[in-house]
Every structure is written in C-alpha cells, then in structure tokens.
Image 1 (cartoon, rainbow, N blue to C red):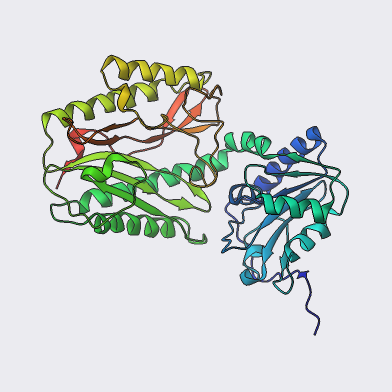
Image 2 (cartoon, rainbow, N blue to C red; image 1 turned 90 degrees about the horizontal axis):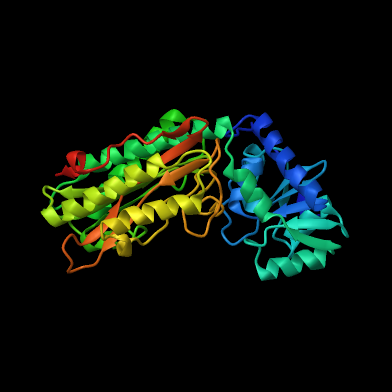
Length: 400
C-alpha cells in the first residue's frame, strides 16, 4: 500500500469569512514585505497569521500547521486528522500531511519552498525545535524574521475587517445584557457566565449561518475574584453589595471583540462608588484622546496624570488599551498598537483599539475590588468612533 508523506484532499464547497479579493490584497501586502526583505518563501506558523492570510483557523492538538507563501503560491499545510476541512476554509491551495513518518509536515513544506532560498519565519512563534527542523529540511541561505512586518500589516484594518469587528462588538453587547439579566443574589459565577456565553453563540449563529463556531467565552468575576482581569470563572455565589466584573469575548471567524463592565449586586457603598466613578471618568477622558495623530505613549502619560491627580495611579495594573483584529488579543497580540508608556506608535485611520482603564484596590482598603470599563473604537479621519453600545457606570450597572 502506498502511504504518502502528503497529498491533496479537496472536497466540498469553500466558505470564507471574506471575499477572495480581501485575501489577495493581504497577500500582496505580505509579498511586498517579502520583496523588501529579500525573502523568497514565508513559512507562517501562528494561528493569527495563518488565519489572516488564508482564512483558515487551525486547531493544533499537538500537531504543527503552516501557511507557505511564495511569489506565486499560497498553500496551507494541515494535518490528516482534519481531512478536507482546512481546504474548505482557506484561500489558496492546501496540502495535507500524514502521520506515517516523523517530519512529514516539513516534507510538505519543502514541496512548496524548495531548498536553498531565503526563508521568512515568525521568530515570536516558532519553537527552537521547529526552527532547527526548518534549517535541516529547507537548508535556507538565511532566515529572516517576518513577524514584525506581518504585525504592522494586521494593525491596519480593511473596511471588511471593520465591518466584521463592528458586528462582533454588537454580539459582545448581547452577551453583556444577558449577563446583566442573570445577576441576582445567590447565583453562581458560572451560571451567569454561561448565560452570556450562550446568548453570544446563538447571536453569532444567527448573524453568520455559514461560519464555524468556537472559542466564544465569558469571564465573570465577583468579590475578591475581580482583582485580576483574566481570573477564571468559579462557583462563588453572588452576595448583596458584591463588586462584579463582566467580560464578554465573542469570536467570529477568528476575530475577537470584547466588552468589560464593572457592576454591583443590589447596592454600592460610597467608597466603591467614588473609585468606580473616577475610573469611568478616566475611561471617558481616555476615549476622547484617541484621535488620529496621537502617540500611544503620550496618550498613556495623560491618563496616568489624570489618575495621579485623584490619588489612584498606584492601583493601575494594566495598559489602557490594545489593538483588535484577528485573534487579538487572545493569541495574536498586535503589540505594536497598545496604550502603554513604551509604545510610540501613532494612531492612524483604520486602526481599531480599545480603551480599558483598570484599577485594583487591595482587600481591606475602602472600595476594594477590580474596576474595569472597556469599549472598542475605530480610528477615523474625524476622530474615534465608539462601536460598543452597552452602557457603563453606576446608573445602569447596580443590578440584581
């Protein structure tokens, strides 16, 4: 029996998040970066770049995946366990590698790249082991880190991307309202979180009937569990006067959006209200600063000063916002577009960024808990457009 190292298995109808022209445009941008760097073949291995340039969002389960781009070809490399699904969900060609022999993944890549060329790869993703295999199998003249160039490209969103992100923000709002409706004394965090997650998944399925559904989730924290933004959901039961943190994260065809809000169960004490209102004020001030031409580091300094004047800067535990796009920021962090002291990127039309001031007041201190507000904004020629709809602040979010 002939047991090939790799083969092509193409069946069914192809369904992509965007028209083929969108991916052709992205690939032209990548090839321009390759030409500038002198790269003949790119071996992209991260979930975000494979999805961005091909539409295919892989699920590795310990197996490697790639997108190989040359001057003429764009080929996803996928594992046999997926059969033809990668081809149905990708732009360009697809090669399936088999498990019959170790390194068939690299044999499949070699069939596209050949040996002895200049190879681009993602230094921030490829492991040391895989980098050594790249050298062994492809025998490149030189390797060049192409990841920074791809990140810069992903930071600028096309109109089609912005339209999808806009719908994602609306879905996040749906999850927020479902969570608000589920909040009551005695409810468990997990029950409230599931209400938000289920509402979002149903909404995504209604809006995108041809999509694949995965990785939409909720972080919902109460009491001391609010001290960290990414603290897992527990079975803690809500008590009257609890501070709550609502965090919804829908994913549509590889694009994440998010909504975060501070809430209280039933009532809010004076000390907590003062901190909450100060953080809301910082949130509104920060959003007003998201103008085209603003520098991330300078903008961050202004919000720092705003909080320092109110004696709260020492409780800041996170940057003030980050880029949103394909898999941002769960896997595909676009670190060049973040509101931090050490990022000098200038905001430009077509960028999509969050404003999300976060304060954590330690246990035993008046107003103890984690306070977070989070909106997503599109930078336009005329200024920031807020695409988040769920209200923030005490007037709407003392519930249950």
